[in-house]
Length: 616
Image 1 (cartoon, rainbow, N blue to C red):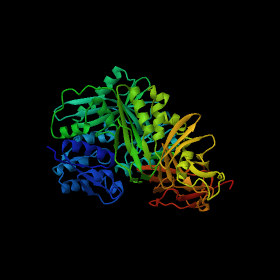
Image 2: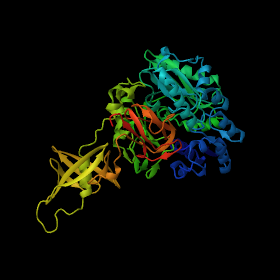
Image 3: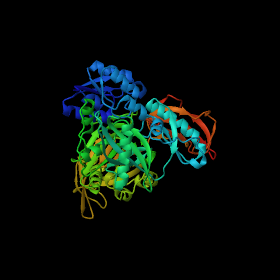
Image 4: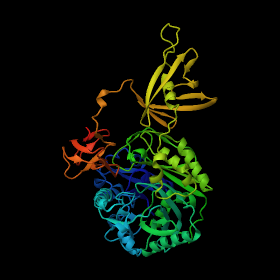
């Protein structure tokens, strides 16, 4: 039997695997980079081994170092989690060659399916040859890995070469493999997948379907099980294809077969992921199982029951990211002061209160999962829980998640992979509580003198300025004999942590949390502004500032100071949290200054370049 498991991964999935191991009485070992020295997964494991460095290529992608760590810590098994080396056949072989138990499929199965090009050949799908106008749109996709990295939609032939270059660079950085290929891009399709689980005795379970159509940058945001609205015949066909794929490579362990379902229920095989998926909790909730525990049992040689358990109810999962959806999904960093969701919601996370969210890895903070007897109940439950969740720290996609779950297309199960292309602007329209700045000001004023010295005269209006969702708000209030007052609003109660306001006979309570100039009023985040702006923060027109901390990975070929540029032209690329972000010229003109070079690390707000427009 397995006694000690090393998890060759980090963050949320490492913590999730450790949780099951503790329940089974199995000891745990974490590995961590220097950037993750104080990360939650390194703190909760029974033992932790350092991987020197911060870049993934030097740490979590170094299979040789991870095997050495397992042996040094006395582990007898390795679980790869997902991402990084989870679909690397060479790593799986290195683990077994070292005498350790590999908690995953055989290396040969990984090899057959880990490359999407080879998997398509195995499924009898002919590759797309030279791309022509008639083939457009197409999707450029990394042959290895997943998570939306190394993927680009191409709608014009003129953009193909640039998309191939960018996808290769991103894939090589994320997976250590720069191979890419092209396939037809299905418009308005649904992303549907089948969870499989297979033992070493010939039993293969098809554990229902999942819908993962709500995606940003080809990375899933909201997932659910079962996939709604599928006919019985289509569901059965997907099951049969998934089981056939598993049996074709003598698969064992947990895996997922992914499809695009086009209008008219035409299915397109995408890939087989030879690992646990991020969205596996919705399947666990519906089938009442622990997939990680079953992975360990299969690795120990135990047999599955002839048939899987019966499903019950519906489950929905939302991925909470530290990112700004309204600003190109830009990742955000900073201190996570507080993260909590209401009871009855499963929260899988790799961070906790007080942790710093850095630039080196994926910006996902947590996964929130709701289970209920029906889809409508599960969706309502999750939306309500996220709305009430306490999330104090970097900007997140929480409001987007709540609005998505309540959008009529989603509630009616009419969503597809183009959902955010159609609705992102409306879903990210700022809608802060108009009374939140007043509540913050009143809490700040708590305890101050109501009258100046000995004078028994009404005080002058007090003003405070706050930044809310990128806009400046000024509020005014008065100190009177009866307490604090504001025009049109009755102040029922005010102290440093709680303010009660009444408008039109309706009382609302505001909880106040302050972290320096960062203030959270219920779910609204504010920043206290000084009375007078700092003139040193002004920049010349046309200045391009780093939208997030990161590393400059590329500068456009031939670009130097004095080069003519066109509006929208890519000038340089930043890499942050495993994703590349283009910095483009805001206007047509001349590059007046260039302060970036490949390899340079920059902080948010750093001046990268200046473009002077033709009109000055």
